[in-house]
Length: 390
Image 1 (tube, one colour):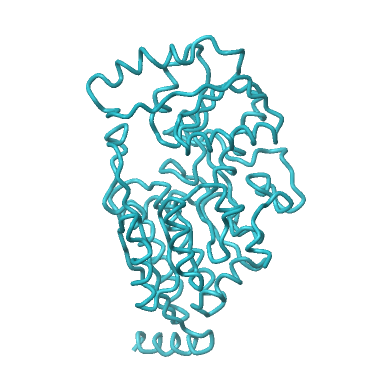
Image 2 (image 1 turned 180 degrees about the horizontal axis):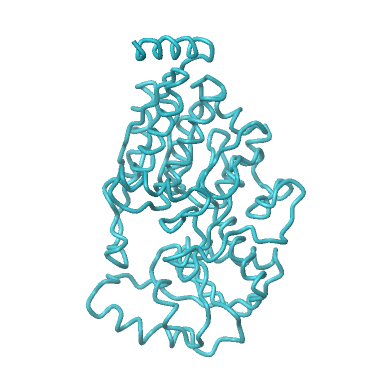
């Protein structure tokens, strides 16, 4: 009897609010890569997918009371197949797609599906929020600029204002180093010296790997100019994890190793994080990663927009998500929102040492007329993004 009464109530609420079937998908691109630097970093089969599943469960828990029904499809695709994979999803009526991929594949999907809503849950390239922005792409993953600014603010707060920048030799490493140099200039930090460590290939897990590193890295970074900290720019994950204990001079390491700027991590228990961690671990049987959290955040943003608008139309959702009415609880101490000028979600950046969150940026004292969160990354007057102004 109680169940039938509840069914009637739910049906009435749904008829008033406008029930919606919300069919979404997540595309995770599979890239060829070397073995990870440690077996602790082996890629799991459900990477990012588990975060999407938790978000879908959360959306369904909330949405069912309004008659909404949420479903998410998983797609693992090779880089060359991403456009066809997206086309197959759209042929099934799916116009809301989370993408866990690098910049090239994200842009390929966005350009081939311009009337779909694409949610970036993987690519941190600052250009995607600038000159290469797309009107149909919203970014959940923090940009490299946001991460670099988070490190720079903490460094300034600690009065560590002399940086020794050590970067890799790959294009992504060089670009990341540029972000750190930009952040240093923005916050009044002095990059006293910059050096390159060449990526010579090969396995980082060979029996002699750590032996060679122990001999080579101190020589490569010997006798630097006087500095307070070492900033590692190693987007390729080649050398940075070895830096903290193989420097010529003992100094803190920040950036790609040591204290790292991340969107989320399994140590986060503040702001209700414990219940998030518990639910994720129950679902997946493992600790959360940034890829999982970013995918979760993407679909939770969709769920919140659906509940508030009663619509599953990508255009309606995008409009609401970019409006002043949208905000989302994200287990980071304050609601998160989207920047209207480039589609980037503004959010705190956690500074994580592998065991604890040592700090959170933006740091106290860094002010902004709209939100302190806008001290991280490109502010509206600085943006190169044109698509969101059209």
